[in-house]
Length: 444
Image 1 (cartoon, one colour):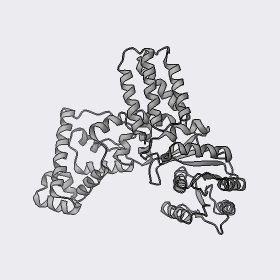
Image 2 (cartoon, helix red, strand yellow):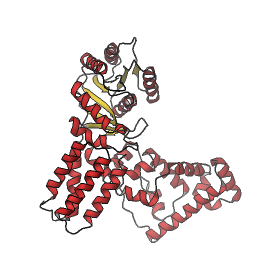
Image 3 (cartoon, one colour):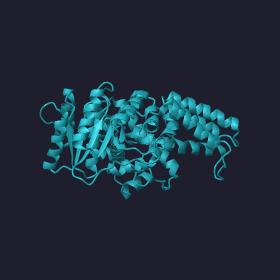
Image 4 (cartoon, one colour):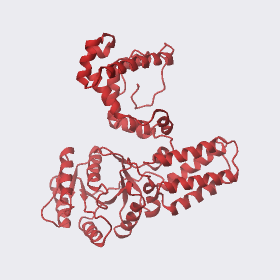
């Protein structure tokens, strides 16, 4: 989502850090570029004005740290101020000691509220909770069916109630949670195409009836400044506790995410980064800033690996890789590990310098991994371990099994052989150890 902003800011920082000394004119020039980059990213004008003023005040005449060049100091200031703009620190979901806890989701129609309900339920279940989802959107018939379908997929119960009174359904849902020993109730309320008094009155009535421990507003990041205006209206009339920012994996400019905390005073608690049920994660302002500025987010990457159950490489496999004696069977195992962590594109986005990697290699083609996996799976175990046995007839059989042309099988084998040769050059034939990130799979 923040790609254009990331590219612009990284270009500005590259120019700054390339200078040994910074004059006040240099700082002013950089601030103008940063201002334009933020405005083009659809960040609220008042937020941009205050942000740039704070950065400039700190950057001009600042007592530079000995370990940093002037350009690096400006980058450090931008990182700190942008982190503060997004809330400073992670804002946890605050639950009470009562059973069940009630979480109420509000937002406009089309914001991704029903999907966010299921994602939040799935996330809380991973944390040891027993959630029940309550379908209170009685005006959009597909909403209840959608929530039930998601519930079946995740094996999480959904209470749909009877009748068309959302307040009564919400109250009955809480009673059902007590009867079935569920400790979390997540209420999916109805939205409208725009803010109106009827929607606000209904949300207030449900709030009074079930006394939620937390009210979360689901904001569609794709709607830009409109999302900020809607959130401001909800903050005034419903007084929600935090934001779930949906569709942060989209191609919009990202201004809503950078503006909403400052405009509404409400923190972003969760970010939705994909369509899958596990694509909701706690929002860490400092990590998001590092992603935006191309500094990577290795901590989230490690946590994702641990959550996905990515196994540490066994000694024998690591030894084969160090000596460039790895097999296609090893390669297949690594592909499966990458998939557990959301795919190669997701991993690359979390690495420092991801923008430069994209410039050099282009966008990641996840479909290419599918094809490679299909080809390798069409081989026997012996063929994966010893590709030298793959004669013409075997390659034809593998191509048919994978649904590809023989030349694509040949191309994979050629690339695999060249990779092994390249790794031998890197290790000097002595199998030197590589630096690894704890919790991450080794390999390719």
